[in-house]
Amino acid sequence: MDTTINLLDLNVNMLQEKLEALGEPKYRAQQLWHAIYQKHIGALEEATTLPISLRTILHDKFRLGNLTEINELASKDKHTTKVLFGLPDGHKIETVLMRYNKRRTVCISTQAGCALGCVFCATGQMGLDRHLTVGEIVEQVLWASRKLSATGNKLTNIVLMGMGEPFHNYTNSIAAINRLEDSTGMAIGARRVTVSTAGHAKAIKQFAKERRRERLAVSLHAATDNLRDQLMPINRRFPLDELMAACRMYSSITNRRISFEWALIDDVNDSEEHARDLCKLIGNIDCHVNVIPLNPTDQFHGNRSNEDATMRFKTQLDESGIPCTIRVRRGLDISAGCGQLKSENTVGIS
Ligand code: SF4
View 1 (cartoon, rainbow, N blue to C red):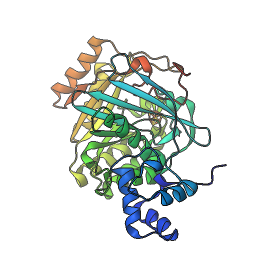
View 2: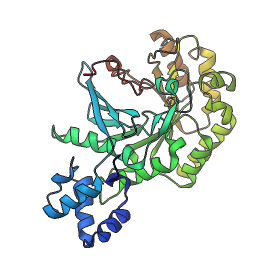
View 3: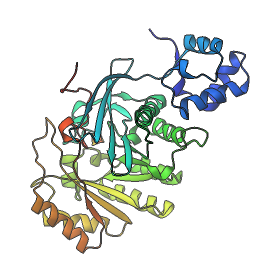
């Protein structure tokens, strides 16, 4: 059993305490912090600002991360990379790096699996294994940064939209975001971070009260309780009335525009009536709607809507004055699209 401490689970004060306990001066913790979060070292041996003797001691007592890369897949167009990581307890997670136009975005997981069971989602179909630690969430971003810097590029955006519901693992997700935004470390701007929730109304209110500056995306997919109960079981806990009240509270406290996500499913939520219901539901909220034709998963038999239905849906939103974008489906050849992540890669495992 590995008894070392994961350095990525420590904030700067904790790191300082650990090094002070080893008899090291304060600035050594700052040097190590800098090496991890600004230089993005991949191993303690690379922290060359520290004396070799200290690196040897650190190596015995600490480890730099929990994730082991099991498999990496690149889409045919080379714009999307998906990696399957193993965790020390045998669970697995996936992380996706996307490079489109000028954006380089990493989509990170906050849980191994997910308890919320949205019926169209591969992660939901597998159930929850466990919450990720702060270090495990942050490490996915460090992986992406290292990967990009190898080709002279920099990460521009982070979305907490991979496996899991970030607000079900609220404390660790927020602590990880704080770490990523820390001005003495990676210094990622809050506006470049998007937190995506399936509609955890209580946590949305908390997020609003804390006046968080990150972007908020709410997966809606249905505008009536009857349909949403069937697609997203979380709706039975936080029905639409409560969810919309939380969204309005978020909007009024933060003055931020919400993104509503809508996976368009043939004959399920893509009719003119569904679009009308949606306009009625969100019409008085400052928002933007992202329409995503459904991505296929093994255990859900619904299909993506055809182009006509997709355009009709968008037109109705446009006519009601609700900004709407049809998102291009990407990375499908490696199952890296929204709702397709799971702990088992079926393609290309060596
Ligand atoms: S869509 Fe998100 S919240 Fe729903 S089951 Fe999948 S990972 Fe969980």
